[in-house]
Each structure stands twice: as C-alpha cells, then as structure tokens.
Amino acid sequence: MTIQSSPASAQRVLDTLAKSEADRVARRRRRSFSVWLTRAVVLALFLGLWEWAVVTGLIDPFFFSQPSAIWAFLVAEFRDGSIWPHIAVTLRETLAGFAIGAVAGVAAGIVRMQFPFVADVSNPFLTILNVLPRVALAPMFIIWFGVGEGSKVALAVSLVFFILMLSTEAGIKSLDRELTLTMRALGATDRQLFWKVMLPGAVPAIFGGMRLGVVYALLAVVVGEMISARMGLGQRISFYAASFHAEGVLGTILVLAMIGLLLNFVVAWAETSLLRWKGETQ
Image (cartoon, rainbow, N blue to C red):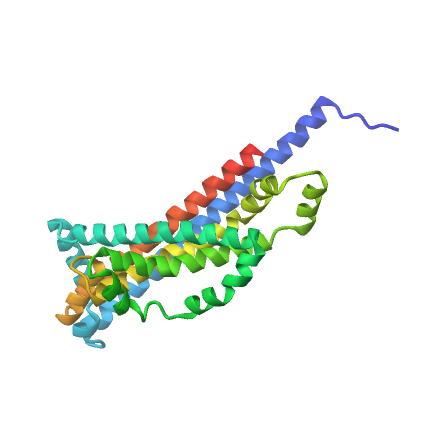
C-alpha cells in the first residue's frame, strides 16, 4: 500500500517547516537581545556603583580613579591623537609575533604528526622550552633582541608557537580513526589523506588555538613594553604607573582590552567564514 501526498498536503508541510524556522529565528533574536541588554545593565550598574563609591568617599580615587575621570582621559588622548602612535606600535608587534608564531606552530604540529620519529626526538626539548616562564624571561629577550620591536615580537612568538603547535597536534589526533582507515582502504595516498582529511579536520582546533594565541601575543608584547620600550601601550602603562596616574593606567588597560576583544573577534570571524566556505564547497 502506497501513500500518495497531494500538492496541498505537501504545501502544508512546507508552510509548517517555514513557520517553525521563523519561530526559531525569532527566539534566537529575542535571546540575543536579552543577553546584550543584561550585559549593558550589568556594566552600567558596575560603573555606577564605582562612581558612587568614589563620590561618597568609600574608595580613594587616587588609587582607583573613577569612570568619569577615565572617560575624560580617553577623550583627551584620542582627541589630540597622542595615543594613536602607541596603539600602532603595539598592534604591529602583536600581529607580527602572532603571525610568525602561528605559522611556525602549525607547521611544527603538522610535521610532528606526519613524522613520529621527529616527534619522539623533539619531545623532551620542546617540553623543556614550553615549561620555561617566557614572560619572566622578558628581560633576557630585551638583552638578546634589543629594546626595539624585535624583542617584543620574539617574546610573542615564543608563546604563540607552542599554543598553535599543541592545538594542531590535538586537532589531528582527534580525527575519526575509522574515517582515516576508510580513506586508506579506498586507495587514498598520504598526500590526499593529509589535505582532504587531516588538515581540514584539524581546522577547528587550530582556530581555537589562534583565539588563545592572539591574546597571549598581546600579553607578551605589553609585558615587554612595560619592561623596556620607547613606544607602545605597555610603555604608557609603566609611565602612568610611575607617575601615580590611575586614570592613565586604567584607561590604557581599557584600550588594550578593546584591542584584545577586536583581535579575538577577527579570528572568530575568519574561522566562521572558513568553515562556511568549507561547507559550501563540499
């Protein structure tokens, strides 16, 4: 016995599916609006309580400053343009260190997964280098690479490299073993297996490492600039701290937070775009 569907019933099914999808989109938008509204309320409450505590004398503005003073400081810095050269230097050092460390880390992870002998030989050496407190060694990086941008880039590379190497290895190791065996059974070469299965499958883990790596690159650069630098936001933090300029320190930290958020957003956008392109091409 066969059941034949009429055009009217098929249309009703399509209308039901369309309505269900529209409801799902509407619920997602309502939830997104609620999340952003709650964030705004929490931030407003925090800033309001902070300002109120300073005005009423509960906390000392000399040590903690206050939101209105920080805002006035940032407006003045951006209005006269004095902060832009420092932002440019910090961004340039961060992006250079991140790019070099990410490329080297991904390449090292791929090589170690492709050649187990190389991984076995390099494991103890890389482990020793990875456990070294590179941030604590920042003064040595300045001695080795100078007080210019090179030492900050090198410090960022030393952090990003291991994050991306380990993320790449974890992504390749997490691949479905049955899929790999099936591809080999179908006659796939090692080259085809790598480009068609291993590398695409490791992309989410690699981008997860990139999100973390770009933040650590910024951290490394700022630490290096705080120790010794001619320009950069880290150098400004040290200068304002030495001058007991609380709003300068907190305002510059806020700028750094915005830069870190922007860099993380760019990496997340690149990941989403790549995965969407990957899905469209399959």
